[in-house]
Amino acid sequence: MEFYSNSEQQVEKVDDEEYKERDYATRQKKAEREPEERGYKQWIMGRKKKKVDEEGEAEVYSPSRSRSSNKKKKGKMFSLKLVFKIFVVAAVCYNFKYIWNFMQDPIGNFTFYHTLFVLGLFAGINFIAVWILFYKSSFMRFYLSLFAILGSYGYYFYVNYTNHSFVGNNIKTSLLVMISVLMVINPKVNYYLKSIVLLLIPIIGIYLSSNKFALVWALMLSAGFVLLFRVSKSRAKSKSKSNKKEGRARRNQKQSA
Image (cartoon, rainbow, N blue to C red; front, side, top):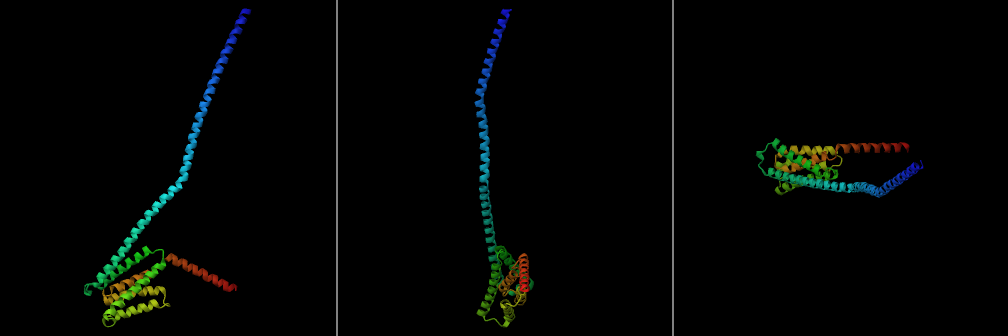
């Protein structure tokens, strides 16, 4: 019996020693794996952090890229607008050349309606060109219309002064020009009435002289169109509203006083 008990004790000791050795081996393996796992985890975290930083940098640099793209777009738009404006100016120059050649042709080849159509087309092209070039500046449109009126008067008086032909066959056209001058320089005449007169007088002048003074009537028509539509309707409404408000404020001040 003692023999069996001793043998059992020895077996248990051997088992304990084997268990301890296995446990020690597993601990060593875990200890060896832990640095590797930590390094792998750190590598993964570093990759994630790098991606986040790159995304942040992309977000930081995206406004500058958008600004540069906006600048490029603005540059393209500016160049297109510049080319379009040059084309408009060239169309106006050709328009004047055509009217000059039209004025030099014999009078008998043109009827009243044909001449009126040509000069009306000339005035319409000039009106559209002025609005395209100076759509933001009503003052520039006003001064251009004034320049057109002075140009028409200057050309008429120059031609008749050099030919000594204010009276005679041209007495009716001279009277029309003088009426338009009086209407323009009179400050008491309504603004819209002046514009309408500058549109009606050239029509009568075309009926009386056909294409003889085509440039005079064409410039006067252009000035009448530009003056009539010098201020847009929205701005006119806003100005009328502001004037009404100022009038009410003045009335309230007088009543309070």
